[in-house]
Length: 386
Image (cartoon, rainbow, N blue to C red; front, side, top):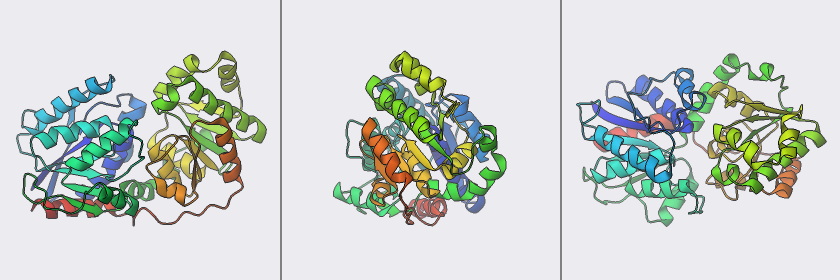
């Protein structure tokens, strides 16, 4: 029996972990034992806790409760806690054969550093993504994790190409078990989940009725990245564009507010703009949406406007065009396919992109695998460790 430690810390990682846990439970229960460690990076119940019950995965076996803090403080606490678990000083008396990491958060970086230092094989899901902007903490995290990983599970061909450009290919580079480093184009576990939960979401979510939304007649907007929320200019430009679209197009715009965004709105927006947003009948400010709710919003919106990597990708899965409120994206395939337009927080570009996508017949080619990435990933890990 192989023993794997799964690290989660942010809401998107919980969603990805659901696909892997489901594959282990349904196909590999006699070969793999999984322990789930939650770093506590996201600790708001709406941002984290409710997802476990919604997605049908076990509550974490370990929770480090690190909470918020600077990158250094937060990451150092995570490294310490993850290292203790891997070294048998935590909940498990059984040694770990490997650690599963997702994406590009501080939890990912901490898991890579902790496991790499003590030579525990690292399996990185969503490897090879690059925005080519080293000012982004996420870009730093994903690069470090990739170079320390034993198997890099790249979701797309572009991700494989990115790794090759950095010299990461199948190689005999020595890791603890002497099996070297491997790159696997696996497809995307988020696509697995989106296809698996789409019908269930329509049955379980009542958000369209609750918010009085008609299918295809509203815009979904999510804003949470510090480069937008912490900048008075950026946040004002985005919300001014949302207000003008709501007024000029007479269309509803649903904005599930990340806790950081909700906190900073009164500080970063002028009183006039804040009042305009809060009193606009076509702008619906809500709490963070649960998993089934966000699926329905993404699936039935006419357009998604977001600075989230995960949301722009899920919008693509459901055939919804996307205005990307960032200067670059790690999901370049979406932009190349014409299904997403990069605008940064530029008011004119946001308005232009909205007008373009509203009138454009967008296509959504099959870029992200066959919805069975999770099973392929676990089988590859088993083959590697045995």
